[in-house]
Each structure stands twice: as C-alpha cells, then as structure tokens.
Length: 261
Image (cartoon, rainbow, N blue to C red; front, side):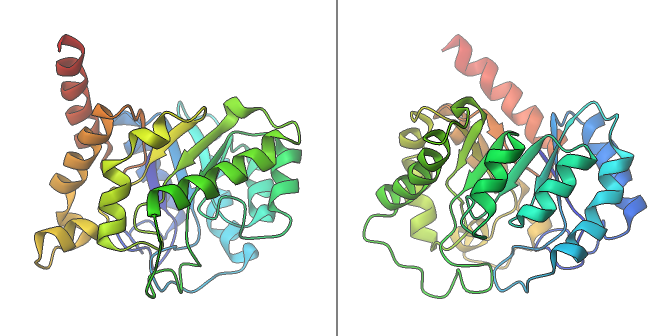
C-alpha cells in the first residue's frame, strides 16, 4: 500500500503532494514501482495535528480519486470521517482505512455496514492532537488486541463479512517507544487472529528514538525496511509504506530466502 498524503502538514511528506497534479503524479509513480493499493489521505494524523473539516478533506482527495478511477491499483481512503469515506467510495474508492477503528465518529459503524467495502481498522489511543501525551497501558499487547477485536466483532455480529476486515496495531499512535517495540515483538499474536493484518511503520519516529539521534523522516528508510522484514518473518503480508520500490525489493528478497528456509 503506497501512501499519498494530499496535505500541507503530514509528518513525512506534508506539502509535497499538496497540489492535486503532484498527488496524481505521485500515485502513478507508486503504481509503476509496484504498489497494489494507493492510500489517499486528506488530513494529517501526525502527533499534535489539527483537525480539518470533512469538506476540506474531500476537496483535497476527491479530485485525485476521480483522476485515478482507471488505475491498476486499488484505491483506499485514509479518513476517520464517515462522510468522507462515503463520498470517496461513491467516487471510486474500494477500501476505507480508518485510524480510529471506527471509533472517531458515532456514525462510523453504521456507515461501514452500509458501504460494505473492505475496512482497515487501526488502533489509536486518543486523537492525533493528544495521543502522545503520556500514553499509558497495563499491557499494551492485550489492550490493543482487545480494542481491535471489539471493533471487528461489532461489525461481524451485525452481518459484516469478516474477510473484508483488516487490523492494524497502530505503531506510533498513542504509544511510547517501548509500547511500539512490544507490539512489534508480539506481532504474530495479531497476525494469528482470524482477520487480515496491515502494518504501517514507514518513516515513523520510533526509528529516530531507537537511534538516539535526529533523523528526519526521509532518512528513516533503512529502519522502515528492517521493521518490515521482521514483520514479514512474523507473517505480515500487507505493508503501508511511502517508499514502495525500495520496500518491495527488500521484501521480495526476504520472502524468497524464507521460502527456501
């Protein structure tokens, strides 16, 4: 899954694809590099980010969606607003990726049941504006798992197809470095659940924290790839990344080696 943020303030590429034409060009580039899915976001969810209105969000991403209707890749909308998800699906998007796991809006669950498109449910403690203010867990692995399963069950008990649900532990979203490491080291406990699993670790700040020195987001590719390869070993097969070509090459090599082993 290739990331394209049509925003002025995302942590990694904010402003780079703010222009509609630039965002469309980046989408075509990622498809050429091997992206199977394009994840389009119109609101930054970096720590401390301010919210935007659904109208602003839609104004940013819908022109991109309309230009990519015939893309070889599937289209995903990265939004916590059900009205944006609905508008995007009506415009041609096939996947809803929600960083709140449908908890961000009271009508999200009913909207998901109505839209019936594949869902990525990500765990986040709090909101982007507050999530990194002293996040605390007694057992981060069990608590994240419980929350994600509750949201998945809320869908399936109402008739939603479980094969359309994908879970994401939410690395960096309301978690300290130690929380992130605990989730990564126990990733197989999530991948063994009866749902698909997606991992989003690309360019995240935990890499900078581990290295204990300043590392701008665009200098975190080696750490991103190292994490993705470990996740592949644990069974993960869906990766949300900014650097499609480099990550795909690393995962292809690692997968071939693991097959022989």
